Amino acid sequence: MTLNLNNDIWPQRLGASKNGMIATQHFEATQAGVEMLEQGGNAIDAAVAAAFALGVCEPNASGLGGQTMMLIHTVEPKRTFAIDGSSRAPNRATMERVPRKAMRLRGHRATTVPSTPAVLGYVLENYGRLPLKKVLEPAVRLAKEGYMITQLQHDLQVREKKHWKEGNAAEFYLKKNKKPYVPGEIFKQPVLAKTFELLRQKGIEEFYLGDMARQIADDMAENNGFIQADDLALVPYPIERRPVSCRFGNRRVLTFPPPGAGRTLVEMLNIISQLNEKDYDLNTLKGVFTLCEVIRRAQLDRSDRPFEPNFYPQVQDRRMLTTEYAKLAAKQIRARTRSKKETGETTHLSVMDKEGNVVALTQSIERVYGSFAVNPELGFLYNNYMSTFEYEDITHPYYLRPNGVPWASVAPTIIFRGQRPHIAIGSPGSDRIASSIMQVLLRLLSGQPHLEAITAPRFHCSIDGKVAMEASRFRDDLPRYLEKRGLSVVKKEPYAFYMGCVQMVARERKNFFGVADMRRDGSACGPATIKKIVPPEETSPHE
View 1 (cartoon, helix red, strand yellow):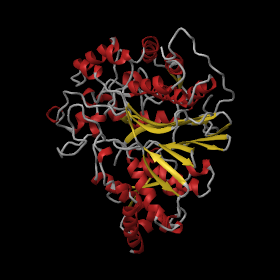
View 2 (cartoon, one colour):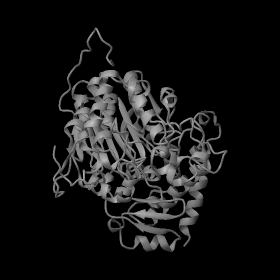
View 3 (cartoon, one colour):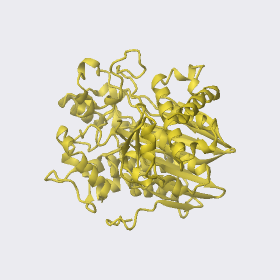
View 4 (cartoon, one colour):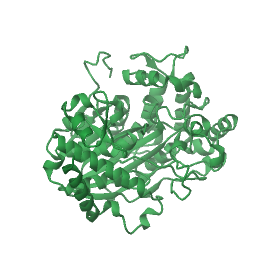
């Protein structure tokens, strides 16, 4: 597949199939997932292959050096559960060693212990069907043979100009003259290709216990990073957690628990359920203002009620999730409507297979290009999740402490109609994730077609009342209407990168549909045919 540089032809944004569906933020990663489905893999195999591939062809957003969160529904046994793949603060990371904010943003000291390889290896081993060697083939191929630089990636390389000097990433992601790649040029990553090939041959344990782990520890020691061999060796398996949920209309919504931001989405939907439909009509001035207040309230409540993820299952009074609290919040918002910068970067993919297994996966290296530090022997970017810890309130559950878990804003979501998964959805965008998903769901459940619901104009309201919006796509009098009611407006370009990027797949009877948000380089596609696989008797399917 090629990308027309004049933007006359985009990657396939809308897909339809009878054999399953995958939507990701890069068309090459979508093809990696389709390849697994066509070879007899299930939704987990497809998601893992696409996730590894995204680390190659969307390096600004995710990779081996980051973390991965998932919501999974399996048919046999029938269950829906969250995979908490949080990275961990290195054991030697303390407040005294990162006193300045700049140290937490870029460079080797900005990174937490990468968990993405462990998470993807775990779900493949326990819920996948194909061997790791097969699932990693697309990532190896993309790194070795290269992929086409898109306009978006060129623009990001230009945008981050002032940060390239803060690490060694320019040597790996810019041209030899330190200039950005031009759209249409083929970008190859031979060092990363060797790393993936080594993982294919030796398994995921190589990253944490083998020579690869030694190379990471040596690189950290040479550059004053915190991660040492014991941090890698003791990386925990991801934790399977119970999703948070709510009813919305005739649908049941299951989404990600702490440390993610699913509670924010649930509270938004619960509040909206207490309002009249005309009060939150996205096509009216009052409707947008009301939803701004809903978004603002839910974010404020999450900020006021942080919970340590292992303690959260013991919490009895989950006020944010209750209908009673939603009624109170809705009453307060109705009264207000009658009266006169986070910069996180993430990637998301959604998959359904023909058997009914579903995956919504969100992974990240935190900000665009993470820490701007690359392991020179392995070719992957380290994350900068040290920037997401709490640094002032020692009682805060996400305060920086050895082996601590960073705060996350992810909300991979599965929506059920009856007993069957109907929609899998998610988005990148830090604090814009829940609001982006909410707006798409409102449009979908009002009967708007899949593609229109996702390409429709978006807005987001921060806790301090700043409304970011794709202004030219809304009615001209909306900004002034919001400002007269005490909000400030930040105008964004049409189809803004800032406003998230929703990847959605849906099942309608025996047909599957998928939509990839045009705000990034994604595509949606399903397998044409499915090959029946027979694992070799003499080997484990995951060797």
